Length: 105
Length: 119
Image (cartoon, rainbow over all chains, first blue to last red; front, top):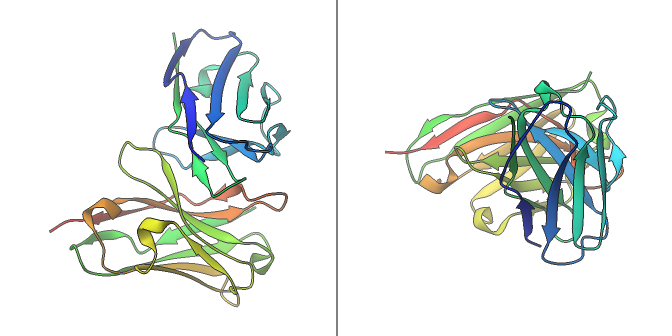
């Protein structure tokens, strides 16, 4: 399954509601996770199984979706959220999206 | 606290071998499937290989089949990746990662180790 993330670059202001998209080439059956990777760091799990928040992750992060279309939402963007975000599917094979780089405007 | 600490990276010539290690602590290692994930410089993430909790099953991405071998020593809580016949396109940061308990995502990652394949 190929994953297409959009946009590839997103610039938003502190406090904005931000939505990142991930689209699969086939049905993902909700086996989708989201990762945050800050510069020079390892990826960090944010969301698994489409909408389950990993322990310790702030509640401003949420996930939704079904079928081939999935979304990561940050309800109120914070400066520390600057990072690249990757989606990842584990329904058929194990593949990552190409990432969305999130910047502060 | 879950910790995964990789070691063994560096510069290696094309065609040669290298072995990576990942020391795990803070959890019951032999309860979890484990994996290696790589990231080429300024590129995205790619799953490389997975080994089951007891070492009985292994899985590889096509590009490394027959060249890389994932293994584990549960007595030492250590994961390994033996990389043979290395190519320039294997140049990447390699992360050790733990598979989740509720699905085949990765819930914890090591800090990564750089492998550079160049003459």
